[in-house]
Amino acid sequence: MSHKKEKEKEKDPVRVKDPEDEGKDKLPRTFYEEELAKLQIELVRLQEWIKYKGLRVVVLFEGRDAAGKGGAIKRITESLNPRVCNVVALGVPTEKEKTQWYFQRYVPHLPAAGQMVIFDRSWYNRAGVERVMGFCNEEDYWDFLRSCPNFENMLIRSGIILIKYWFSVSDKEQEKRFLQRIEDPTRRWKISPMDVKSRTKWVEYSKAKDDMFSYTDTKQSPWYVVEADDKRRARLNCISHLLSIIPYDDVPRETIVLPPLEKDKAYVRPPMGEQTFVPNKY
Image 1 (cartoon, helix red, strand yellow):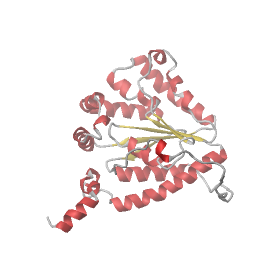
Image 2: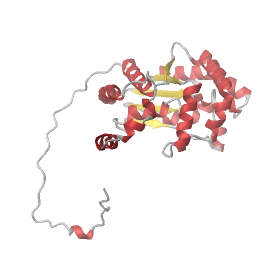
Image 3: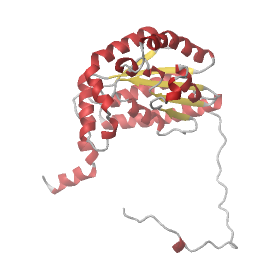
Image 4: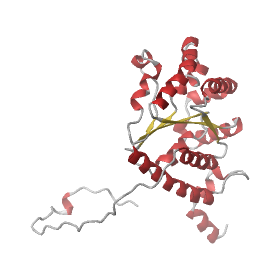
């Protein structure tokens, strides 16, 4: 390899090694980044509109393990104000929570006026992992399927805008992503023993998803399926759709004028040498 080519490779090592670039049909990185930047500006406008109008928005992200839900959520939120847009990812329920009404642990996280809450997995755990892995009994499972549409209709009638996304990924693509997580030390934390076990229950998860849709994909609260074998396309399609669901406009704002910097000649600051600084390693 020539010295020039080595230099070019060093400039963008991530671009060369990025597994998302593999495959002829993958969306080109340059186009993806340009479109994402445009959509993120629109997300900021949407955020300001939600705050200005006092809207309450709930967005659910569900789907197979390694379907790309987390990556999509990250791209949605990375330019937004966490006080307006909050991500909720609940862990395993406590012993106390297991004795409560099933939806009770989710209700405190619902948005107030001027807020959007994104659930990284939600109350649909009962129809998915709990059903397939046997973490709930038959009575609890069927009670959930019957109760869920009523619960969501209550939220909608209260004025909450409820949007549900299901990220769909093929078995081959899921396997590829699992292997990437196993081999990459920066992604290894993303794969758990539960994820590995889920590979042996692909058909059971498929049936659970189909049963869940038959009860909860309603006219009032439909599921929106995102084809997620190409992460870049999935992210752009999801964000674009989210922006189309909630009508928004520019918020009236006053012109910001920075005041002059305050100066006080009578105040003498302590010597810089008395402070402890982080070493300039880079």
